[in-house]
Length: 299
Image (cartoon, rainbow, N blue to C red; front, side):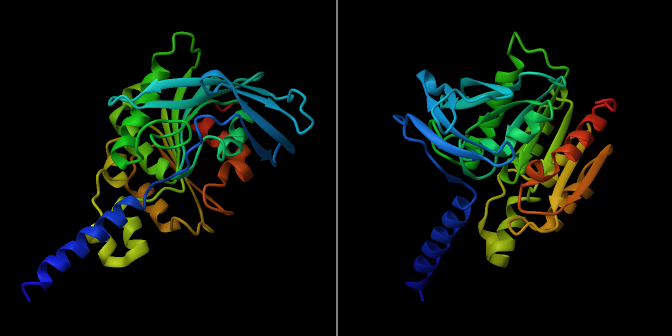
């Protein structure tokens, strides 16, 4: 029996590490990468991204000619509080900027390239977006941990706030999936600096989503770190929560749970289609709801 105790403790520790590591699945881009190919289904384009100095992207079409885009992409490099250099892109519409800049927090997998076309529908609606990779993702330095993504998102917001040439009228945070859960914490900590929060396809807490995967053992073994349910109760400005009834990654009920804990003014937008596919299929409606909660009903 005495021999079994260390074995059981070791097993619990290993399972705990596995559960706690399941939240982040970073996709690195090699430092010497020169280009990448992506398909913009909404724009019906095949784009070749060429990485220049400091990973500054330029775009060509499939024929090698400069791509005719309705937006510009400027590279943004900044460090988090422990010194990890993070890579981001500021994507700005060339015309019809609506005055709202978005700090966009992506999900737990992929990187700035693989998720790029997912934010373009919002740019086409007139929003300017800072889109970046967490530590350990894409070109960003460091290790992907839940502690680090919190530092990363804080650093990204600070970077936006320090931009001297920024002309935004409104600043909002839009987070998807893990980034949506993270967005509640960043919004609560920085309420005075932002105007609204948008959460799409987010889980209600680390323990809730772990329990969905592994039952009671997931709930017991996963450390909470920070909870969306607790954070969203501390945020007093407008909130839009978006969740698909067909979401097979994060249960629809967890989005409703976040909404129930949120303060007024708040809106729940029930959609269909895949996990965090809202901008791809509902960009008109999402843009309208964002503008409405910012008091821009004439947009």
